[in-house]
Length: 250
Image 1 (spheres, rainbow, N blue to C red):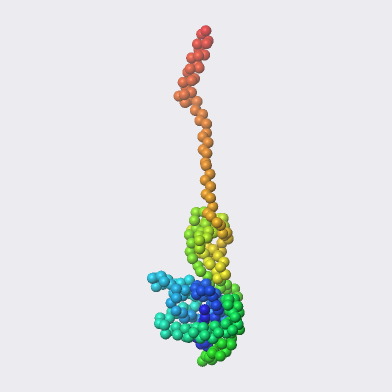
Image 2 (spheres, one colour):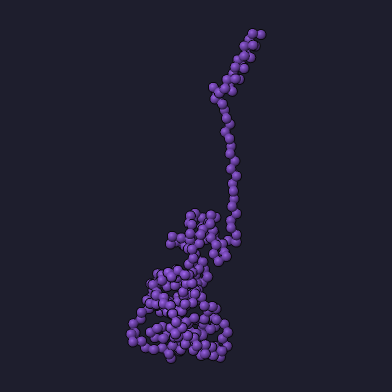
């Protein structure tokens, strides 16, 4: 995957196992840490960059991240508009691949280490001097954590047992959290963070949902003691009074 600086033609690239959201975010993070945030990014309409949702306002995860960072995302509408990056890849598929073959490079890690050596030489040959040397990349403040933006964010419903599911895994939230919805952030490094009302929650991954324990409530009935004027008491009272009178007569 690669970026080309529109003003100078400088190439910034890295090998990944696939083209997708996380690799695109990873490349942008490394570029930003080195040069700053670009004003805009011009891309094709790959699903990584353009949402397939029929809602015109919908954004891909990469598009949402750029919007949060204040970067304009522009989509190429014709094959010709992508000519610059396509020509670059054709060049690299020829020159770069041959150089790697000579060095017997066969894995991504070694290939990326070689790129650190190769790209400065490549750029020195093909870069151009812009009419305006003003650097429009925006340097980010040290307090800004790019991982808070360059990540996949998805909403999840919290079940009654305080668990959520994400990517076929179960997570148990910390006790005392009364949230109906939370935001799950999947970071570039594979880490998962869960946020509610702007704060990150503590959680643990579990294998299965907690067993619901139902406590049996036993109702203890209070012993009923009839009042003194209760008919039942009156009946017995008359009975005993009759008995006493009969005993006295005898």
